[in-house]
Image (cartoon, rainbow, N blue to C red; front, side, top):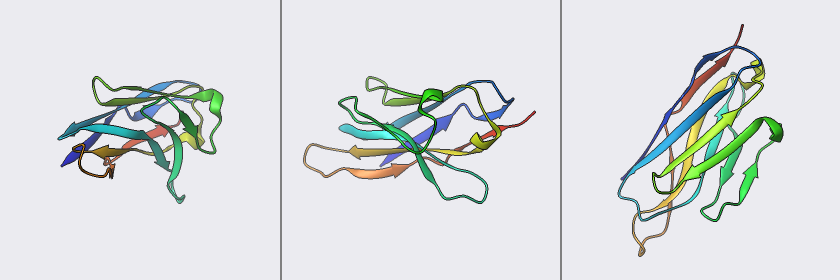
Length: 121
């Protein structure tokens, strides 16, 4: 089994920055796509950003200049930095990853439990 655990959420003021982290653990052979989704109050879950094992980055419908994604495959970790925080960034942020547990198995998609980010003065 594979677990994804997010950290770094909390209450932030508008204009500030934050860094979210997600660590994958368990039996892992390879992590292919890894990234972040968010779900704001009364909204559907949406893609924020994801990155492949080759470094290709995909953004959702967000302001690309404020969001930065990076991953460290030596630590099975992906980070999301958000700058110039706005109240509309308030959401639960979920980590998501496609993980193969062996070279003989297809990858499966996993979700973390989410971390709450609230942007308010």
